[in-house]
Image (cartoon, rainbow, N blue to C red; front, side, top):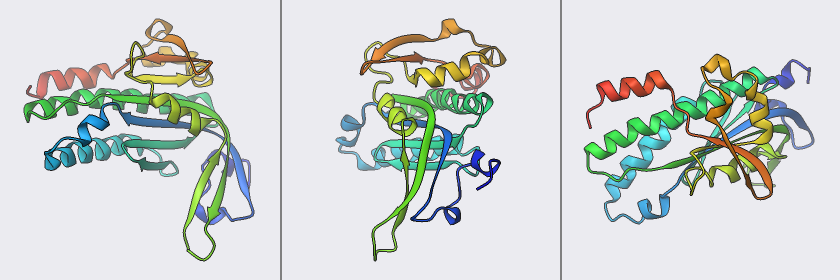
Length: 223
């Protein structure tokens, strides 16, 4: 595979059971915080409507790149992106705060229907990860497996978002370093981020939203 091709997540037809590709990727995991209580609700129609709207609208924001891997694990929606440079990592961060803003809109709709509001945790990480193709012999079932830090770290961090004093968007130190020099282009500064230690690692967290989108919600969506 050429160096140019390695800047994108390889399509299934380039992955075999005997090869693998290493590239810098960024992962985002969006986890419903109060899912245990939500799924225990007796009104199954209400739960179905909440989960469907959350998943479909989150995927809509995530799917800004045809090469991205988008999926759902239980109550968690995730996206994996090729991010060979800092600009691409910033685009993943933009997805994160757009999803954070989306929750303001969704919760307004839920509240208007007397549904419970939901909270989410958003985990972000970037690293050089290996992607390989795996299969169970004789089943015809194949899957991509990501080996490295980005996917595992983002998944773990999503569980801390909106928990205790930790803000909704939580990112690895490497992810923060990748975006820190470009914050100005988003009208942000480093004071918008706090840091803490989770599982022995320094991480950064924030509660950033899209100001224009949030203003539109406030002016156009009834309570």
